[in-house]
Length: 222
Image (tube, rainbow, N blue to C red; front, side, top):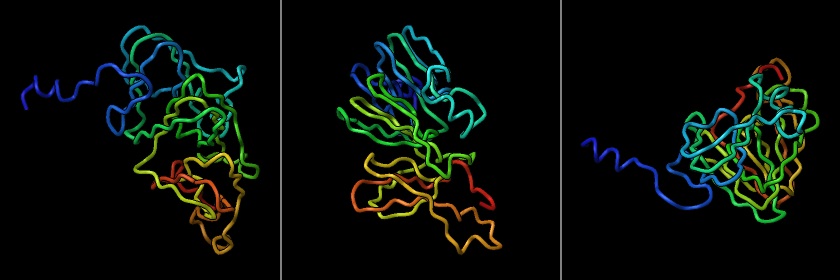
């Protein structure tokens, strides 16, 4: 391919509003104001944009990521200004969701990529998992209106409950569901498979999003 053709073929699309996938693994955010993005996910931007980490004193997501998911610090940052912001994470696939007013979803904190400033968020910890240090244990409850971008390792699978899932492979679930923690007794004696602890979703309404990857790795001996 000639150099000029390569540049044309891979140039970003011009114009447009709202979150847009430039490809399956790269999110384009037209910015005129503020947006929340996962810390460290910015790969490029045009225009005039500043980034501010959200501190734990402001509430929000910082505390749970520092204590329960990673030791790397602030999980989200506020991008403010005008231009175009390009975000991605570890070549994970990007999924864009549109939340209506008062529509909510609970998402694994490690899988949030970006959300509009109009979206309200709060921390939701799953009782008996709150002390464990692995992904999928503490979720962020997001309420619209606004767009939300999540990232998944591979293509997500959406399942209708009842279902049991591995916490490390669980990406999100609908707001009407409240998972409990289940243990598979067959793994508890003399086993170190990491599969003893599971999330249990009951009922027949709503949905659960899983990915073909264990975000935190298997938890040995749990």
